Length: 101
Image (tube, rainbow, N blue to C red):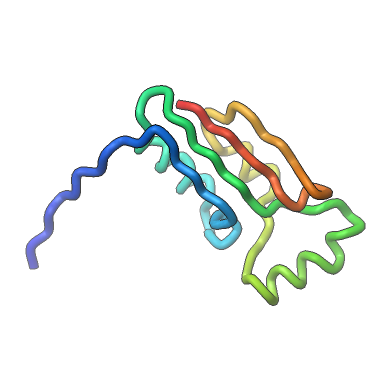
């Protein structure tokens, strides 16, 4: 078996939508992906976060059953480095995060 090192380029923009709720360590992926950004590059994320109480009791079980998705809690989001903006939408179901290197 021959292994070669892949030379990954640097990017101006990275976009990640609805993926992190399926991973065991989302903050690890986010922080490692930032290494792929050019200087002044931006990383945009859209993620499933803990909804308000009046939606949580039925939405969370449905999301696990239908999509195998677990919401990201605030503690995990705080582990993201270089966060410049965080906005919540639709009773906190969706959150957008902007990271700038």
